[in-house]
Image (tube, rainbow, N blue to C red; front, top):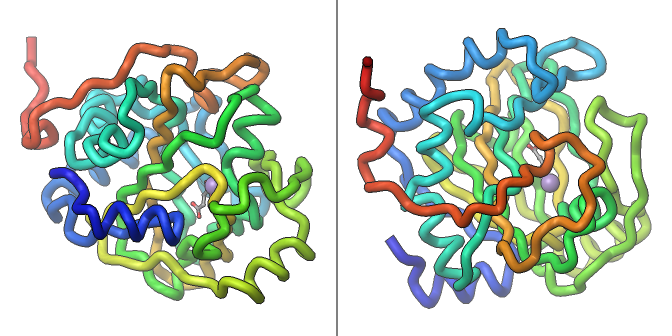
Length: 262
Ligand code: SIN
Ligand code: MN
């Protein structure tokens, strides 16, 4: 399911693109069914919130669960990315950002490339972030906020914040964010479960805490061209996977196929 030329133009102009009804309720349910046992694992890729101890993010999921191994190869998810990149790409990072009801904490203003460059030595901001909403995402349960068009400015300046949350992140200076918002405005990326979201590596974004009674889990896959691979290996693999094998698509019904029982 390729993106149309108007969708490609919107992604290029705004830096993000929402695709509603991309995954069915059944497919989202199959994914969500895998979460409780992954939450319960004592795995270093499960990172908990500072205050509540609820899981904030779960990483490396395609190597921990067979269904997630298929999600990262799903043609409706990676087809658009390969269409945009037009070259072989590897799985850089796979996670579910949980943002639990009442306790999910903020993601500070940042752009992903700052971390990819500083921590992993990625040369260029080419990686694409591909999301699937696993819950309905509304204005109330901690949606991502985007500054449309902010990806056009390349790098924005960033510093490493090791205090605000349990997840160390290269974040943006507030004066810079203020200027960008005054010039370009803000949007909240909302949609029903099953919505897909694509955004660029230099897109400035963040998300507020979830003070609602509704969970807000989002699946995220970062795909990076093999030609733009990491040059540093300081972070654990679940934060930046080292396997540069180009990702290949499975059939469209790959999530509904039950694993073979030996
Ligand atoms: C991120 O920026 O990587 C996460 C944002 C979110 O899940 O709210
Ligand atoms: Mn981010």
